Image (cartoon, rainbow, N blue to C red):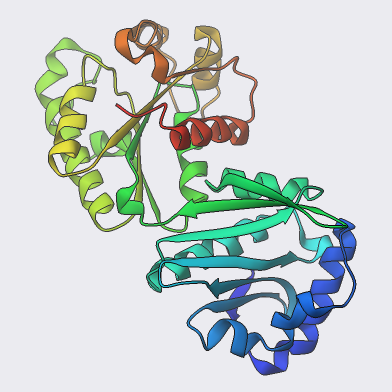
Length: 332
């Protein structure tokens, strides 16, 4: 388990060691120079002006770090993102990034920017997955720098309704998206249905309409509450356009929130096979096939569909959803 804390003066030597190791491992170490003056006075550069400099420790060893540099009252820059080479690909960079974004929100910044070199493909992928958009490139005598920016203030983000038939992977993808954000809530609407302890009616049956309306209304109010509190909010469940989407979206919009809608679609056989593989979940082909058919023709929401072959890793599906969400293609 990694421990995150703010920089202390006694950490200076370890910071330099991590800085050198990470850049050398990536093949982008530019040598010593004035461009490293911030590391010579971390407290004066980052902490005193109202920023942050976080360090990640594992068993007493410094294995990761990142700084939050105040640029104006509205904007901060995330810099010096470093992870020791032998501790990479374990989610530490993503955790440091999320912690810095969370701290930026606490300090009142509206947006953050950062850059990395063109050669650092893993870093660029990390930032893109976290919702950053590229805004420019700069060329020096040694490197091409890629500039990114991200707006903060989750309450301004749309509530994402992520749906699709059983077995399509929507719950896993929603969980991945939530973990990429510094402040996020993942509401599984199926859980709300399980709160009904007696008198429960299977949601796909015609006589379930009143129950379904009540439960989804509660889901909508919960989502609106979290979004109002500043959390990026993702609702996953069976939300068919002509069935649950209008009242769900209407309640959210009535509470002052915009709504995005993403429909994951995969072959029926894939969905059935995935449901069959769930431990303790009985296989009922009829309802699964029926629900797959319900998402086959989305009418005016076809542009909100994301077609899958069933073999894509969930991280890649989350990437697709993130890109389309950022572009506004999923707005309703």
